Image 1 (cartoon, rainbow, N blue to C red):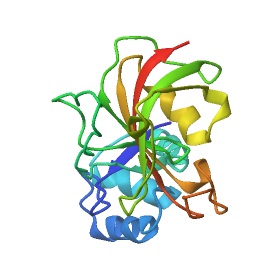
Image 2 (image 1 turned 180 degrees about the horizontal axis):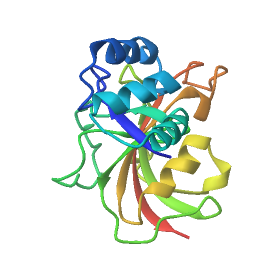
Image 3 (image 1 turned 180 degrees about the vertical axis):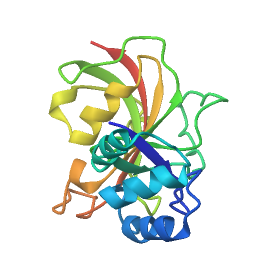
Length: 206
């Protein structure tokens, strides 16, 4: 799907100088991360970009662009978490921004792994550190002094998806919305509706 990236602060796409269209996009995306262009907006975008095409091409372009997904670029820099005692190092070139998947999961690779990436059907051995938005740590294998192994199909959806993005030996940071975590019901030590934060080192894929 063709995507137009919008600045997360202004909602404006480079090259679109029409304030009426960009202000409209600003209003539409306020509180939403994806919007769909109308045929009129598609035509205006074409005109504003000063692209001159035959009439039939314009019609085809506008129809296609009407189904285009507008996605906010996740360009907000976030400070790295403080690794717990016993954790490995974060790469010097680790991204300062998160990537957001279609499910709403946010993640960034803090250290690249040279090994294989697990699949949902794999069992993995990891060390992890989990905290809430408040900074309160609710669980940590580092504090217990031992790693843990489990099947990726036996944990919350955010873990099942997120751990497939990092290779063996790597470190990943996950920001898991409640719908991919413990939902509105919560669990012991985690209130309902909580966003979960994890720093995870993938030790082994089994």
